[in-house]
Length: 361
Image (cartoon, rainbow, N blue to C red):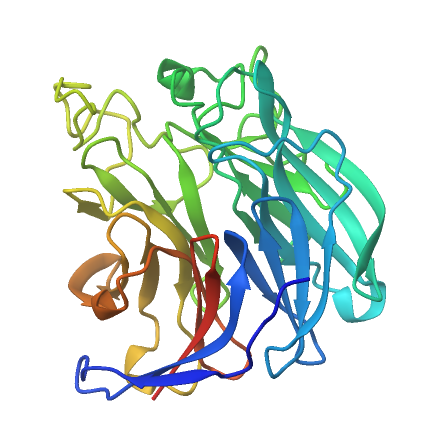
């Protein structure tokens, strides 16, 4: 059993953008936490990449921690239990969605399942989607979920690392964002739904490893970010049917220093809104619409793994006009960032002793 501490520590932070802030430790001793969801009664759900679902009380104390019985769950390197998203009718149905890596070291992929939460345990687990084809290795799964108001969802996928050219191949799911109904079917208005030889689930293509996506109800826009190689992390505005360039167009170079492509932009491919070089390794994302930080309304927050920080991006007319780097003093890899129902900003740190943190004025 793990021991979690409720608000065990409060740290005052430097003043950012004329905003004094403090960070509270809600819980600790989380095993590589990956994603966070807020239950209607104030409790928290946290996925641990190593395969467990943790339920925390509103005060952050341990309620339950149980292994998730997902079919063919594959835990290795970057793979394991990934995102969690409550269905829009969760309060009535108890239904939620989980993404995870599935298979084995020689043949694995990103999968999506639905389940019902009953007394902290997942029941009625139902596989919905298995990205094709399977691949070797244990890297670049994507795995973030965004719910859309038309009762469809988006699932982000990676290129499998060694298969980057496939991000331009419309016949498969590698390096794509897919759109599905909440039962895993293909929505009839998907951009390539009736195109011969094309994977009908595809919403967008040309991605490397998308680990952040957010649908903003106010603007009705979708934002995502993805890992570049050595440099070239991207923030993108997502539109159905668009090609986002990887690996034909990129601001990054390979880890060896070799050039991936001579092009940073290419005709017919969507240029990013913002690029990070050197890489910050973006992970979670939220677009702030809370009340505790009114001056940050509409700002995008991106958590960074390699960068060990939280990046605040101010947008104007779909352009990034300012960027501020927060929380470097924590010296922590930050896996996820969410806007809480209370207007606070919540973070998950990425380690075997991971923390749930709460950022407030």
